[in-house]
Image 1 (cartoon, rainbow, N blue to C red):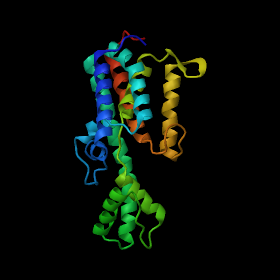
Image 2 (image 1 turned 30 degrees about the vertical axis):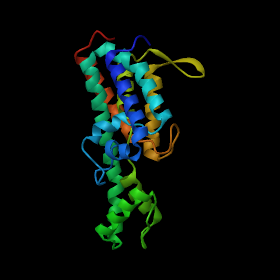
Image 3 (image 1 turned 120 degrees about the vertical axis):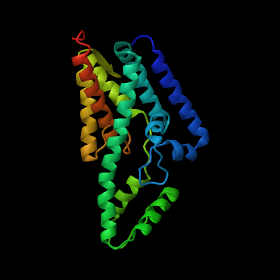
Image 4 (image 1 turned 120 degrees about the horizontal axis):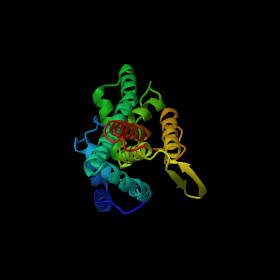
Length: 248
């Protein structure tokens, strides 16, 4: 896809350094730098940025960085360094915001169900904090296991990864180069960028709405992917329409 640009190079190096460092720091790195649910005592406002540089395992960082390498440099060459950085980080922030919003939509009804069952707030948060430490559920009489698991999972599951920002880059790439033929590994048939990236987006929408996993692990933050893609698409569509009419 051409030479790697300086901004993409810096982002790649930063992500790799964060990943290597987190392997040495272990749980402390996750506690401090992953994005926790705002109700969790581990939450810090800086995490809305630092979580973009954290990754769960080798495959997670590999696929994100591969996508950044393949599409990021081409996009940066088209829009410039400042616009690329704005798009990258605004997509990542939007991803975090949408994921947190939908986590609240899972947490609040479950929390209210426990209150309605007569469980005191202090008891609820004690059980949640214990769940963070022990990675286990504490069930309550009169409340379904499903409700407790929904509440606990929302509270204890941190968000990591550059996927939201990467989806913003992918969506923007599809706006700039909609008809560029792309290839999927093991499928020797070219697919236009707008169809390949658009299809990948729709798969994530399906998974977010239904909870069914088609691609990736079951704990994938699908709403984060959607948030990043939407902001990337809107931002690039606006730029292309109003400032970059030479792109046709």
